[in-house]
Image (tube, rainbow, N blue to C red; front, top):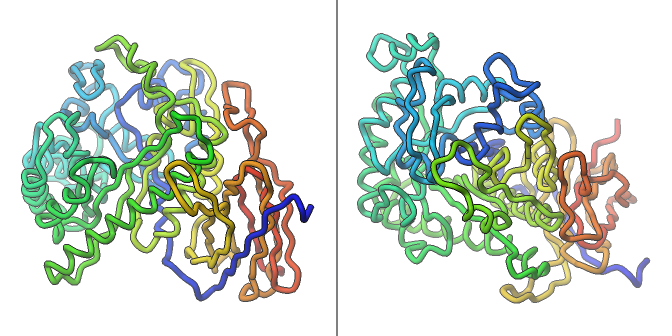
Length: 505
């Protein structure tokens, strides 16, 4: 075994704390796009549908993931969306041309229905407002409709729609990807900064307790990045609580070693945005710290060609339905690790999206729901990654790939839950051919022992899960043991791992 493995070391100490992890870092996203809503969370004709039309098989899988917050209703769609179309009697709601994805929106699900779904799914709502075709007025009216107790036009309208109590939605996005040429109502940094600042001012007058997310760049490859962040924050720094980051990765070239290193690009993106925020803080001599909302992230590239063939103006066509591979799951695990290592600044994150559309959960209309490969690292990290993120000192052999140098074979994050007396290590072995034998110093966790070592591994990088055919799923036969303050673990080649240790009773 010794000759066949690559060796690495890690030191984990209780005192090496990064930050308390905000549970919202395990958030997700439902946009009115493809079959995320219609045929995803909502399908009144489905055998498992409840009285509100929500699929319970999907609901069960969402609850399993323990998703703490879900962004809604977009995405690109929100930039030309009139929220009033989606409230009131369903039979009176207009069908609209939805410009972002060139489909017909039936508006059978809107604000109130989504709030009902979120409550049933044990999650909160992160509401996005339209700063593309609309602005201050629509935003303050929607907030009044959602959060004001009553006695005013919009709050009483909510009551007339059957919702006596306010929804109390506390996290709001000031538009979506407003730097993008694909966006309806694209803005310059100055235009967006001014509009977002004034919209934030009005919204805080309606409800001073809300938190606001200012739009960052649509991705780190935008030609205006990071100047967009610097210029917009000149206007929004004192009124926003977070700035957004969006990033998707793909493996079009089929280069697995390079693909698994792409979480290092995410690392650079986060560090650049933090530096830009702190520059504006210094420039303004502000005492306030700007936090990050990584409210769109995932793998997205498999479905690009199919989506070009979709007939425009249909209702809920199968758009962005990436079928995820085993290697995609490993990158997702590393992306989660990256955000946990920055939990002092990344407080909200939304895997985009939750059902059918670049999603961990897939469905057939009228049929089954199942777990994609990426479901598993998301599930384990969400459920067991609660507590304080620790900063492990890692010594790992490295490799170079096409776009990256000095890529550690061992990618990891560590979470300590003091209340549960539990220590959790999440680790990806990027080595395509050899196991990693890792010596982990856990002397500061006296009396802790391994209770579980979960492994996600597969000989086929391109293995996928389909309805009734789960080719990629974890097992709990991982090789880990503690002896005299040292945890020795073997991470199989090309694998994602979770080790849980608990204090012995």
